Image (cartoon, rainbow, N blue to C red; front, side, top):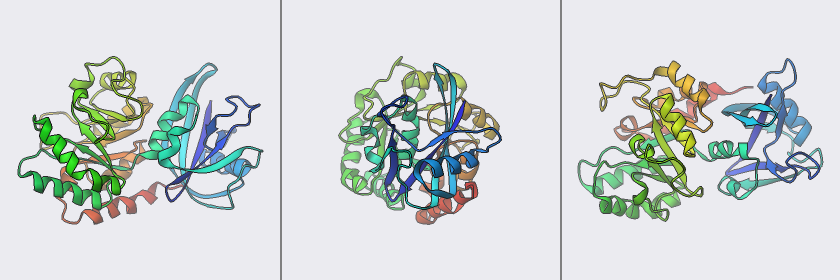
Length: 329
């Protein structure tokens, strides 16, 4: 069974609707959409369902995520599109309640369980940045991270590669107010015992750290991610309840020249096995974002290509200029 859902975004607001009480999952909130009919493409289904449900004509849309869930009646494949342009005023045409909510508020609403990964994908950006090792002064390091945040990066994984956790915490404290004002999600790459939810919005576990756990080690109110290099590691990550993963390395890197890269074909196979958003990582630059999105990734994660870039704002603009190649019109 397959279905298509649409994510309507207006500034930082997303449209949700509420199932009527007499429906299955009655009273739950959902995204507009519905099941494919024979002979329809996913884009055809999206346009038909959104016209019937909320009265809009879809002009263009971009694939966001595919999620396959096991239900009592079998497998459900959900293809989710971000609806970029439409005509008409969205409103419940089948008697359902509709409302615009901020992306940050989406987890305060009751959705069917299979929506969890979709809602996370809605709140995550296309580009993630992993900080390089701290090799020089702390002031220079902090200013470099803040410059990247000011350029428009919204997800930063703090990974200074130092053992002094007090220094790591001091770095986070000094950046905290500015990053929050910029709407940046700051995640700590470290141990569970180091995680401070008042400073970090999430925790990233290395593969060796993730392997220590058999279930989710932090609250569901905070983001949890890990790195995976093969199917076994991905399956373990899903068992412990991560919110998203980094699959790496896609290309050979200078930091790990002896590690065989996954390549795009192997990455595609792993993305299809994942029920959570995926960031491709390892030797990538802004030029790779379309390739990653075409095979179902949330986006890409970068380090040196952005850290050493002279014009970081143009780097982000290049990402934005690339994304329309994915659009259905």
